[in-house]
Image 1 (tube, one colour):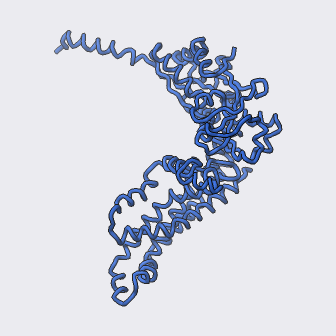
Image 2 (spheres, rainbow over the protein chains, first blue to last red):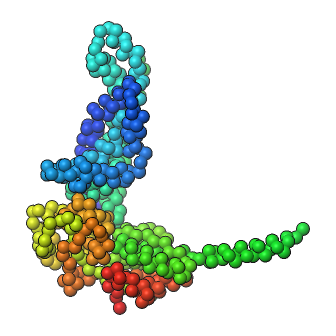
Image 3 (cartoon, rainbow over the protein chains, first blue to last red):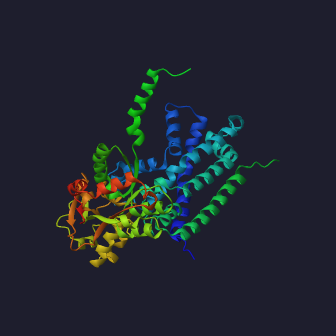
Length: 221
Length: 253
């Protein structure tokens, strides 16, 4: 009977959840800025946000390694504070967060654009402040799309491989994820263990896609 | 209507001119990552002399063995240890008559160039200031397997196992040390001598270390491939031997 890499399953789940939570507020905030406002440099930011979607994941991983490594711009600061990122679970979260950020932003933006400004203007004429409008009118109306984006981001984070293996390595017991564990099982010839993890990841993928579909479907009143 | 004599002569000349390209053969070689630079140098000389084209696939020997077992098209396999060559032989893919021990190597402990570690001995791996030891995956990549065997022999493995950063192949272990993300690592002496950003802080004496041997073999699918056999013979020749020695390898006799 094959043995499942439980630490990997646990890390994949926990890190993906954390990555989505980290992305949620900045992602929705940025989506709002992109949907509702025009500002200099907007196209550049749109492009940068889309990059992790289009670039090969290992390329993004390499950039992250340069940034977060001990000699990197951010990494050296953290290293002097005795915080290690590369080759630890923190790097897994970082890779997952970067790769799944575009999903949060793009889905939230579409949802916010679908809400439209008319309802917001009506609320404003009734005396609501911009903050109150956003909080009590816009966001609740956009919640399905935002939630769907979060679920897609979670699914993308779970499946993350290229960037993760570069910045976190594939250290048994500490930074293996479902994806990287399947990879090393195959290289070791432990096909049974690999198939076990494949079944787990298919199951998780089904759940994620199903949840996303349920959230996006509109209730017809 | 018949073609003019001039056109015929032109066509013939074109065909003759292209013939070296038409008759040039492709030889696919799967070789251990540690042989990347030396084999590319040898191939360059060989291609100039023979007109054949050598294509390389460099990776951890375990990855290559796995690919060959799955049917990847390789004519020649050079592994960094016996175990991976045995795996391929078990799958019935090796032309046993052609198998030979081609090279030997030794292990070294490395650190980034700006490291302050001095008078390093293997037992220093247990010190708290050494937090990470980059090794090619010790479960299956030859360089890591050899390193683990050496550390086990010294009784250090169980004490330092938690510090090991396993990498996909020996060059990735070298890169981890060069980037400063690992304070130390163990690679082959030949990899360290290629590196400009990492230095050797301890050389494992050949007598103390594990016997590191690179077997070479023709794969059964290429038994009729003359170009492959020619290149195999060239790799075993004194001409190639000199290049191997120049890069720091030891040739087996």
